[in-house]
Amino acid sequence: MANQTLTNIFSRALNRIGARQNITDATSDTTPAVAILNDEWPATKDMVLADGEWSCATYRQYLTRLSEPQADTMAGSVYTYRYELPINPFCLRPISISNPSGAPIYGERGGMPAQYEVLGRELHTDFQEVLLKYVRRIKDDQLPNLDAHLFDLFAVVLAAKVAVPLKGNSKLAELLMIEYNGGPAERYDGGLLGKAKIADSQGKGPTIVANLDLVWVRDQGTSRM
Image (cartoon, rainbow, N blue to C red; front, side, top):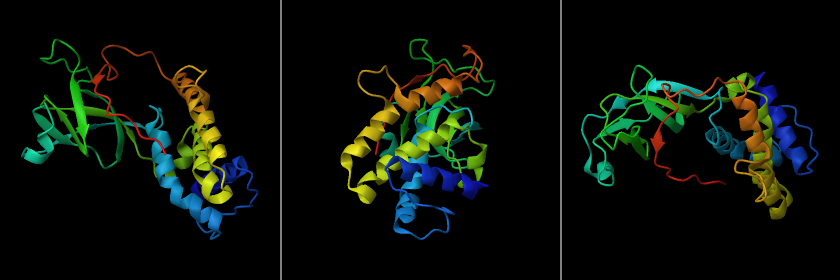
């Protein structure tokens, strides 16, 4: 079932760039096109998942505090404690931190919600116990469990990444990413990504101040492609 789902994503990506190729199995097909798709797939999957707070990919986990502060990792930090980001399931992007009761942590910084920053694979904060809500990495055998709107996103980004090596068409790659993100005339998070976020949010309850969603985060920026 997982192979069938991945094969379908690969086929849709090739169709988006006009490369009509019949793929029977994404994991066993040895053609050059499928080899390139497999090379680009892990980073594409992580990027799309990290671009949202998808209900099917969010997870909560207590963090392990690292015992000995290291001068090289703490040198650029204004916070007291360092925690290891989860690796099982692997953390792609932190969303918020809370205390174990699930309420947002309020600290000493002007009564604002807790602040933190991520340096490498560490989360730095002033709080001694942290429950992290985050976007997790999804393994290929879990693909059939994902929401359907994510498959279009996977396909269009994958198509953009292979448009140049397979078709030599950088303009097509650019247009596909505009379709994904939305053009300049659209509101923020327009395009397929914005529509998928709206569809995903319709299955969630309202945000309440007492849950994990209230947080003050320093945006480190996101790189694409």
